[in-house]
Structure formats: C-alpha cells, structure tokens
Image (cartoon, rainbow, N blue to C red; front, side):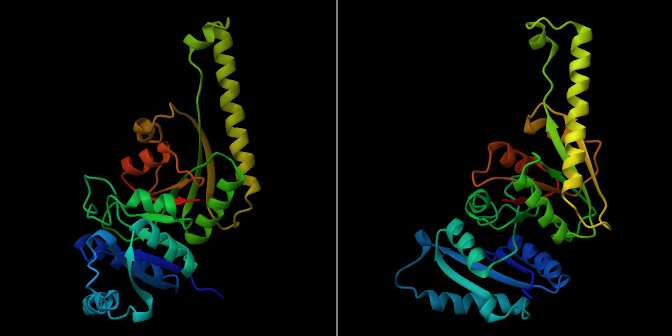
Length: 275
C-alpha cells in the first residue's frame, strides 16, 4: 500500500526550516514519507559548479538538524522553482506539497516561500498546503469553498482523507440581485423579498443535496451552508465571520482564478488548494 507522501521545498532560510519541521511532524503522524527539494535557480547557478557537489553540501547542512531525512529523500536540482517542484511532486506521486505563505505581513516571506508560491500552485497538480503561521498542521475545523461541481466533490473527498478527524463545513457563495437592478424589471418590494427568499432556499437545498451525495464517512462531522456574498475576496472574511475554521480549502481548475488567489493572500488561516 502506498505511503502518504509529502514534498517540502526549502531554501535553507529560517522560514523554510519552520515549514520543514511542521511538515515532518505532520507526515510522521500519518506514518508517511517526506521528501525535501532544494531548487537552485538557473540564473544563480554557475556552470563551473557541479550540481552533485551542491547537493552534497546542501544535504550535509540539512542533516545537521534533520538526520532522520534520508539522503535518497533529498532532491537538489537546478532550474525554475515552479517547474521543478511541480515535476518532482508528480514523479514522487506526492499526496501534498507543503510550503510557506506568500503574504508580506507574515513570517514566511522568504524567496522560495514568497514569490514562487503562486507559480507552484499554478503548475502543480498536487494539492498545495500553504502555512500562514508557526503552528502544528492539525486542524479542528475546515471550511471548504465549493461550486457543487464534480471536481469540487473530488477535492472534498481528498480533504476528508487528509484530515479524517476534522469537522468539515461546505460553503457555497451566491449573489443576490439588488432592488435597484430588479426594479428595472418591474419588481416591487414584496416581489423582491419573495425572489430573494426563494434563491436562499434553493441555494441551501442544493448544497445539502450535494453534501449527501458525497457519501463521506459516517463518523465525519460535516455540514453545509449557503450564504449571500458580494463575491468580493476582500469582504470574504466578514461574510464568513459566523463560521469557525482554522483551515480553508479552495478547489480550483487548472487555471487558478484571481478570486482564489485573492482569498489565499488575505486569509489569516492556512489554505490548501486542491485541483
């Protein structure tokens, strides 16, 4: 049976060591296998320097603090970070890539933990867990943004396997037309109220049906909610303030939306992006 496999990209900064330490603990608890990748950017790599020699020195440095990481699980390569991390995750059949935050206001904002985060997410088909703070990678409450699609269902089932002891709340955002717009079509105040109430009821019924169709494990605590939203990422935290969560799951297609990236950047909690 395949072991749960994680991949962590490091640049030997303090931030990347924090990510590595948390990822090691996370992987051990799942009796899994952790791989580490260090990418030497082509623009910084001297042709006079042999990549094998770089790997030897890099592993020697890594093993000073993390002797439990096997040499065969350390990968030192040259090239573009976004390409090499995504390719390595695919070759290793990794279940998850774990990396640092891309925001400017948090501690995880070094080179590989910052500007490359979006690019890795765009390129990788592997779920990417983005740490936003220094804490254990265990979660009590996971909030899942869903569009009720088959792809979203697949992402939710992956999350249930990753975090079987967590409570999962599905959230479907829907937009209500304003009275100004509907007034143009002859809606009066009473018509508007009835129309908006019908949209709310239908939205909740749809997400309840979607949750039932997932056939999640019976022991898993799962619920679903549909809320009115402006669909403005900057207002998302305010609109979802009644829901308690310490991990946000965003499902995306191959082309990650600006909405998803905006939510990722502004989130105060860890985010996992699943394609």
